[in-house]
Amino acid sequence: MAAILEVRDLVKRYPGVTAVDGIGFSVERGECFGLLGPNGAGKTTTVEMMEGITEPSAGQVLYRDKPVDARFRQEVGIQFQSTALQDFLTVRETLQLFRSFYAKGMEVDELVQMCSLQEYVDRDARKLSGGQRQRLLLALALVNDPEILFLDEPTTGLDPQARRNFWELIRIIKSRHKTVVLTTHYMEEAFLLCDRIAIMDHGHIIAEGPPNKLLAKHFHDVILQLPKEDVHLSGVELGLELHEVGDYLEIQTADVDGTLQRLMEKKVPLGKLQIRARTLEDLFLELTGKELRA
Amino acid sequence: MTRRFLAVLKARNLEFLRDRAALGWNIVLPVLIVIGMWFIFSGGDKPLFKVAVLDGGKSIAQVDLAFLKTRYVDFYPVADLRQTEPKVAHNQIDMLLDATDPKAPRYWVNETSPKGYILEKILDGATDVHYTRATVSGRAINYVDWLIPGVLGMNMMFSCLFGVGYVIVRYRKNGFLKRLNATPLKAFEFITAQVVSRLLLIMSITLIVFIGTKLLIHFYMAGSYWLLLLDAVLGAVCMISLGLLVAARVGSEEFAGGLLNLASWPMMFLSGVWFSLEGSPQWIQDIARVFPLTQMLDGARKIMLDGAGISDVWPQLLSMTCMSALFLGLGSFGFKWKNE
Image (cartoon, rainbow over all chains, first blue to last red; front, side, top):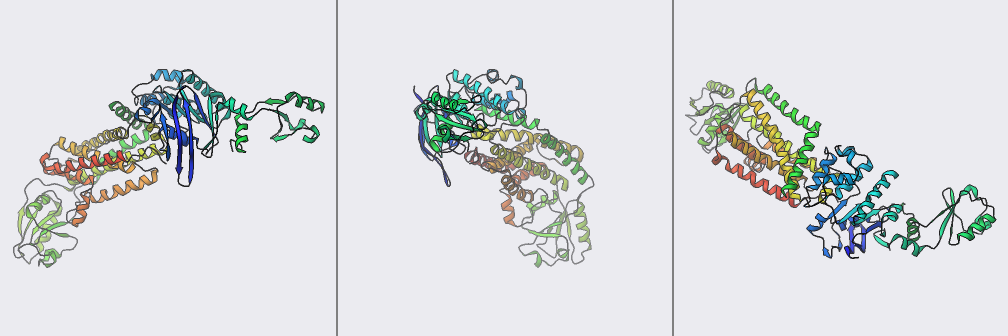
């Protein structure tokens, strides 16, 4: 696949801090590319430089192999992490306002339908709930039927149901072969939606690739979880390495059969045993030695 | 380009019309101004003594006339009789005294001016020399006739500067401008839409106050209403553009408020809203000339009081047009969509 967007040696310095420190990657046409990292990792700064909103201190962003120009604005859709809308306008009027900025795009009714805004279309945009508001912001980002869509932490602050609804919307957008660049600090979100991810920390990219391949490359084991109250023996007595995580004890193992055998031999009750695969959160911990949400 | 401009204009107008608090205040304020002016001026004119003295090159202190020693009267020197005489008619000054020959002084007063009348009575009491009375031609102008454009202009100035400056800074602070910047909308389109929206509002309100005050107070209007409208529109555009220039880069409402106050208060006192700058030091008059409000009021008073035509007020109209272009150009060029 051809790269629609290419980032080369991008640097952004603010007084006293280098927010983005010489990163490079490319986004391929039609894929969902995720920038993953904790708060302050440099994701938003990176994505805003890609959008042309923030001027890089050094480096280059190429759109279709050319530096970003006026045409780029017509062809991209952007949803910021936090944004206000004009007061006293309804959902429909807000969509009409933004639609008028573009030479071509989707019909307002089509956007309303696609983003499930029918019920609130004549409501003052300030009176929407968090999930409804995010759907309106997504509709605004789609108003010009963009080639490439930037979503900066689109589900932060949403309840689980609203988050799942939003993921469904992004899947619909992906099915229309749009390129999506998504920043998030929710692992599950990145894992479910992204074809490829780049993990950022302190302004650097520390890993890049398809989520499954990254996990397969770094991990060959799974994690068994048992409630602490069910395990009355020490790790030494069990002959296993135990990690305490909240109310649970975790055992990392590549040999699930052997480990279960040993636990049964030691009469450890397995009624509440959970087995989970490695996640991107584990990967981040592995790469940086710290929790992703720290 | 036109489509984007019209869309922003429509959205801004809708926002204003639906903001009941702001709309209510903008309707109530002009009514209060009309009532206030009617209350203040229906009882007659207020005393204020200002005498221009033709002193023939000497300082007033050296002219040996007992009348010039009268306390609580502001005597100030003038050099040109023909330029000063109409100011007596317009009540900008209460008396003109020609003291070039201290033995045969002459004076001019406005027949209908209460202040001129009192000053004349004081002159009658002077026994050192005989004063020759001269009358001025033209209709007598009351202080209220002179003040009306000032008060209307001041109201326009505050609405122009603060109404648009604060809105832009608020949009910038809450990130709405940053969102607009992510679209093909250009700074000039956005700014022009803000100017036109505020202009429509201000002109509607000013028109209501003008008509209301005219009906209640019957102030003097000698010139063309269309020319006055042109003067007011250019003045409003100029002051809105100044408000936009102030707000072009500022990120906090508090700082914007300070800057807007810095722009509005000198205009309030030095643009001739409340009193004529006649007799004040030349450097103050020179400074006042660079204020848009001064230009608008000079033009309005020439039209309303002297019946001036476009050939008389073109310097004011031109300077307001040039200042608007300068402010809008600088504002668009330096416009910042987001706070760093």
